[in-house]
Image (cartoon, rainbow, N blue to C red; front, side, top):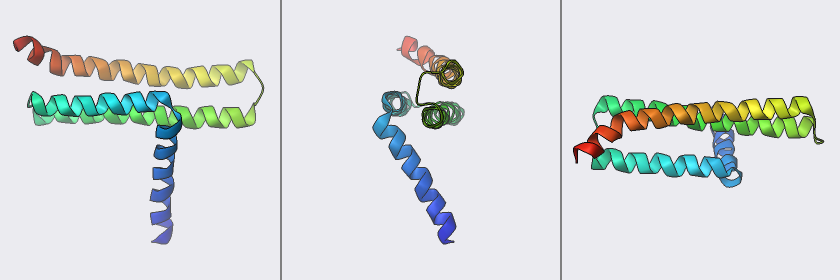
Length: 117
């Protein structure tokens, strides 16, 4: 049981590290809280909440993986290296792609409600 609890602690440390050190993670969380507030204001449906939760998970998970990859690459290749750059840029593009999909999901949910007034 102690090992299981420790693993949760390590995972929380990872999220905490990412929030403290990654500007984009702070932005993702700020947008996530704005969407949650908008969800309550516009009284979105259960299905719309589920889509938002999936989008949150996709973006935050992508950012956590990106941070892990960047840190591992920095450790393995402290000097500028073409292959290291490709690894880091590709990981970052995964975050960008997931954020773009989340944005489209948000538009599909909130734009009709905003335009409806």
